[in-house]
Length: 265
Image 1 (tube, rainbow, N blue to C red):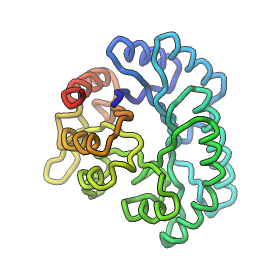
Image 2: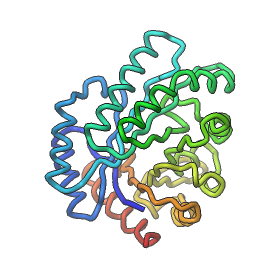
Image 3: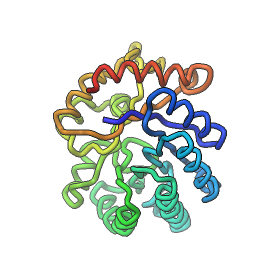
């Protein structure tokens, strides 16, 4: 398994993170974009890749979140598809290994209709992703995605059995799902993994500290990933109002790395 972390998107942050990654034994950096993706340029992607090459690290993943690729509104859907196509091109130009996005959603409609629409919309994009030399995984739970649990994935797997999950145990737990059971039963469907910690008290989320300092059982998750032959990325996600930014962000990444590395060989 390979260790990385989610990077900052501005060029100064890319420079800092690439240097930090190289100095601390991380192989890759992940980048995620929401609505601000419309302002990202090909020139910025070119400069990001040059920074990676200078420091000897790579982009593990580029993610596009919050764009509703199945929107019933033709204008919203058209722009989402434009952004999706451009994001695939940018992921290739960046040298990313993985491309991750949401599946889109049709609020209020039955799951069967959402699956049928997904099967109409996504095949051309999946071909484009494959042609670009990228691996693709889909983000569940939130971010404009009808993939809100295993039942939704199972409905899609009947038609696209190789569809991969971008797996974030903390997000599954927060939405009331058994993330251990997801890893146990569907480990072979997991394509990319986020390492994000949550700490609960009386059922409420009170902190998002480094891995090992909260309630997510990463040892069990990684054990099950081994059993399924997973050899992909474990990407640490600095998150929350305290640990997701300076001065604690880099400490969060390093403490998480120390905790996760005890399970790696």
